Length: 295
Length: 254
Image (spheres, each protein chain N blue to C red):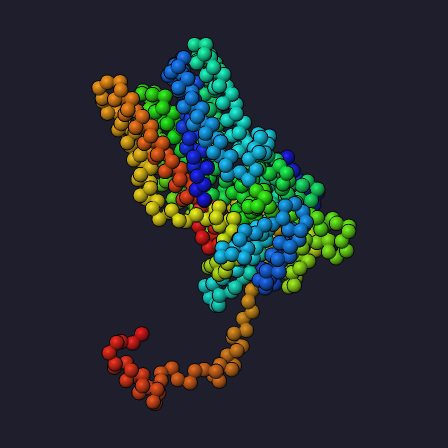
């Protein structure tokens, strides 16, 4: 799949933002006043920034509101509904925390649930696609949810759970790569089933339908970056999980240094998740590539 | 809207004969022509006369080589367009309701005024049947020439999809695949019409007729074989001497 920057930025930033909103909704940390303002500004900045980025790849962004209508069948529509719901509920909750010095617990819990639901519905947009076996696995929602929770815990300064959540997210990442590498073969789809000619002999793409490129090849057959996939996996794993874990577990003296270490952990995690997300798209093979003798 | 109909009154679709298709691409051109001038946004081209031309097409013809374990390889031309699936994933994933399947004839269409151009329907299609038009920013797909097949302004002979009307080899057939007594259904039954990627669970309406087995006339050709056999496997006489002499020169033989 073509790793479109808009979608990578969207899933990375909004995943982190909704992760932070989840913890804030649970009252972790139970902040009010100016400190709360900073926390909510970061969370809304990430969540909304990501959502805005996702509209950049639309052919008609001005019609985006229509995407809220088909929640009965469409995961993309459900994601839109959950995102709007989470932002409204958490916005009200933030108003209480910042300006009225109060924690409306029930509202926070609803907001936290909607934030997590947003991340889950995002992941289901990819998971539902049988055409991309590497995404069509139960581990895909696990990747999105565990990353979002780990990043949210890091940003929220939830010291008790952050190391565990980072470790879990790292493990889920490794499992996803291991299983994903076998997914296309395991799906049973190949040029033989694609053409229906497989039982007659070995099928080979002899001549493509056109001499130039087309939308399908640009969108679905991305092979450029796969060469460095193993190195990028190492970078993603170290930056995303190993280094942040090391940074938050290192015992340090003083609040200032602790904050610097925490900030470094967040930046490292963000860079690692963005790299992982790039691989998520670049390594995903769409079965339509088979028709072109590619994958 | 994006909920699929439980059943459709008819299942209009195409039957494509892989045995007959000669790979001339006439269906591709007639499709592009008709659908650029008629239903919906035109099918645009980008940089059509430049060094890297590309464009939107609703129908494309691939060519495949099939090498059986025994015998000669076979070349098969393979036209591919929307299969108007009964269980069309492109419809249910649409967030806006722009994609829909008609309950009266099963045709899958896009309401271009509601399409936001997110591309998810193209992601969900295993067959590459949908292409986002770069000029219009909306999704384009085969309409089964919905503006021809019911068009009473056209002579009756033309009330079939443009690709079917154009095919000079008679490799494309149009009809109701939901009616077991229709010509296309009989053709599918007789020739063992098949689905593409049945494991995807899309239940395509369009069917492909597999190539007929090659005849085995080679056995009979043996009558003439002695007359056609090579005279000498090894070079003789002057050519033999030259071959040996050249072998002895330094530089080695290939």
